[in-house]
Length: 204
Image 1: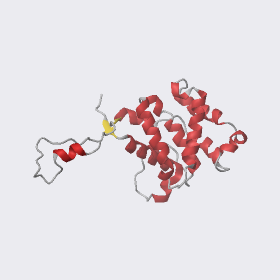
Image 2: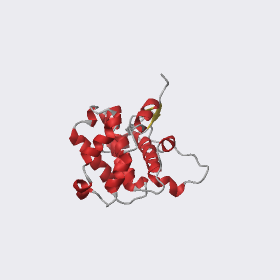
Image 3: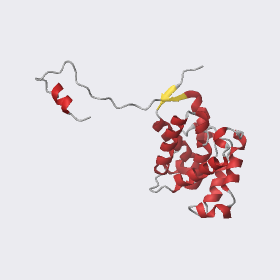
Image 4: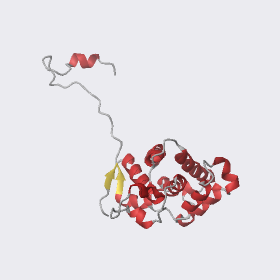
């Protein structure tokens, strides 16, 4: 087995959101001819105009595999980072997209199916659409009139693949621990640094 590359959950979440934004039409705003797209964007159909609700749907579809592939502590950390930064990733200054993605995934959790691997990957999107409900039933939770339609369009792109491919080649780094300062045995009162007595007097 090839050795995996280590990456922080924060960097992984940023990479994931960038790819989701590309297929949701946001690549159109900054892309120039000849510039390479991500491998994910070449695999999926791209919108020709950016849409935040399609973005929310794609994020929810792909992110539902995180809890299957990683231990709970790592999965929670990645999901928190995804939801905390996904609106900023598409230059929005509110939390409408993240709230919508959270709603979709929350309904999956209420279904008590997805997070326990009881639905094959090729049926995940269909189950998500069933739990989301009809346009009229979901209307009170939709941030815009086009949101339900765009979410359904996103869920029709097929089975989730992003985190499965990531899991084959990458591993999460452990969260760095803040080092605790302790007095050095080489510290002397003449040093320009804090002496031992001063360090011992500092509150912990």
